[in-house]
Image 1: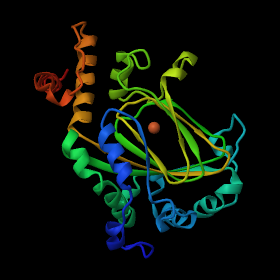
Image 2 (image 1 turned 90 degrees about the vertical axis):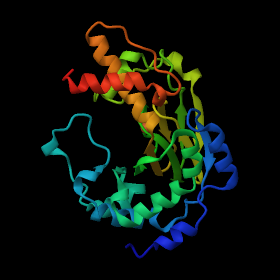
Image 3 (image 1 turned 120 degrees about the horizontal axis):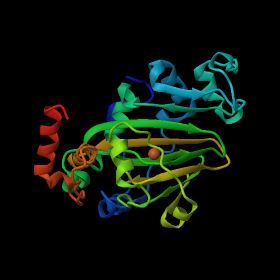
Length: 290
Ligand SMILES: [Fe+2]
């Protein structure tokens, strides 16, 4: 167990204040909403703690870039910044690097932090979408001015801003003009999460400015893009799945199978988890090798 943060402390802390929990309960699962949190000064989320974490994580779970590179560079020519991974993170404010620490819940201390964070929301989530499945946590360290392009993710997500600032512009899920059904089907078949962007889309999005201590709930497959502010930013993303998000994926996959056979596809309703017959059909077709 990490000495920085015993589990008992994690459980005692209130992470989402009452007004954030009330706002989340009203918005979940379909609406994006800005929240607040009290993790910004947490011992496990300082640059030193994150550097230590990165150094004990499996290499495959840490993706990072050593700084500003030329546009075209062969992998074997990638220059070293002369720093270890830990040092790269400790000095990230001045070295122009970025890093993503994936599935930090595989580390016991961060698993306790994820549990403490989500446990405050469990009753609110379960009342709407049933058991909270597949809990995961990711930490993003991004350089000033960086942009994460227009994309969608398959999980329920809350992004907590720990340091620096960024603006996330969130768009409605299930808008066929933003994400045509065929693109959604391709996404569930393993296609890339990035989406085609048109300038006319911008007005349909809700720009949520995230300062230290702010958070945002991003519904399943609600398209979004992120623009980082002028300083290094640290964000913690906590995600989960539900029977609804799993069912939604199954029904898009079923439509993909049907479309390929030139059979009629069906609209996916507001409660895909209740479309039992179609989910059964999907499983049958999979079993039959479709
Ligand atoms: Fe995302």
